[in-house]
Each structure stands twice: as structure tokens, then as C-alpha cells.
Picture 1: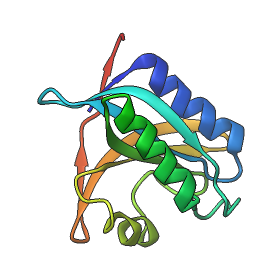
Picture 2: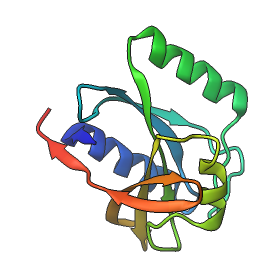
Picture 3: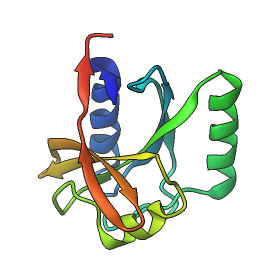
Picture 4: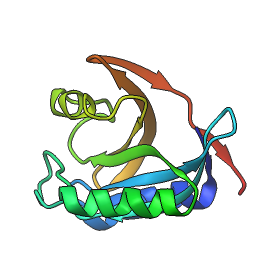
Length: 137
């Protein structure tokens, strides 16, 4: 996925603001072969936990409707890991079963500082890392 620098900074800012709890949200994309992120939609982690995230189903439905009304697609679900490496946990893998083809972006934090931003496709319990291409805009 191609992500403008401003949206990457928005992901990192959201993770820092919510620490020590995990943050969460979604990225809307335009798809022209290689998806290009066009908007970040923050969500509320109703679990309010440093160990997991949970999004209200109705909030997520409204967000996806708004993304589609704008002519875009849901491209990625993002969240932060505040205590572990930015690699999908078993909880992430289980949740991803409901979202085939959607990327999972994880912001890794160590002592409140972002250390890595990584993205994955998770299909059938299999985890494959995919590239994030930072763009100027």
C-alpha cells in the first residue's frame, strides 16, 4: 500500500496519544493496482486496553459507509502494539478472519516511541507481511 507521509504521521500520532492503550482505526484507499491511502479514520478502542483493541460494530459500519460514499474502499485496519513487536497476535489473526483482503497495519511502540510501522495480509490464519510505500502526498 502507498501511504502519504502525512497519514503515516497521523497513525503514529494516534498511537502516541492513546498509549499505554492500543489505538485503532481504518484507512480508506483508492485502488489503482497498488492501493493508495487517502484518509485515516480514527476509531475508539472500547476495550481501553494496552493488550487488545475492540471497535464498536456500529461505529465501524458507519465509517465504512462514509468511506464508500466518498468513492473509496476500506484498505486497512490499523492498531498499535504498546508492549509487543508489531506482528499480529493470535487475537489479531482470529479477528482478521472476518476481513479477507484488508491489510492490517500495526504501529509498534517502545516506551511511547514508534519503532516500526508494518503491514500484513492475513488470510485463513496465514500471515504475510506486505510493503508500505511512503509517498510525499
